Length: 150
Image 1 (cartoon, helix red, strand yellow):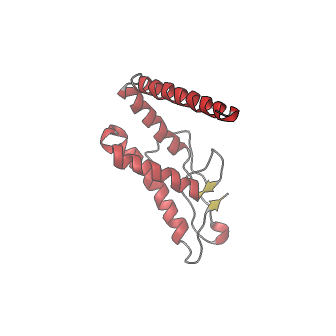
Image 2: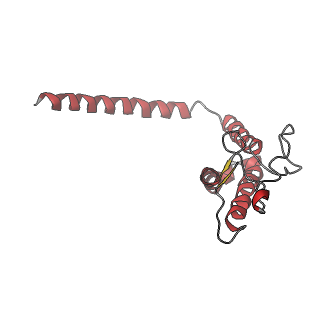
Image 3: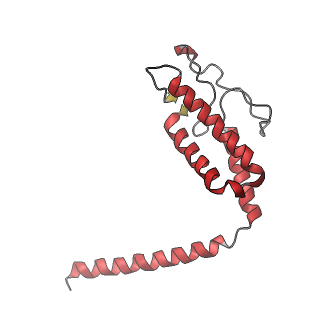
């Protein structure tokens, strides 16, 4: 066997070994969490979404420290781009990452909604907050698509 081939074979065997250890470790990890811990993780995820909201916040907002923001978004172009979610904890709204994130959340609700218990309405509200905004960004002006608000 050529010298280079031996190192490729060894590397391949090493990767297979590491992959099998990794897979077996994940199997053991999944047994380490209780349904209560998954519920708490979901609840905190939804609270994170609420913390990133832009616009006039609803009265049922769980985070009382968070206030209204971005109420004049789009006004310099004479359009209403209020609402949506901030990206990365700053004051920017980027529609493509927002659309991707909310698509994943919506897909999670479709697949696992029956397991979300008391968080299902909060998850739906998070999806609605974003989709209403994304529709606004796409339809406010007939010949424009707003994809970034800073």
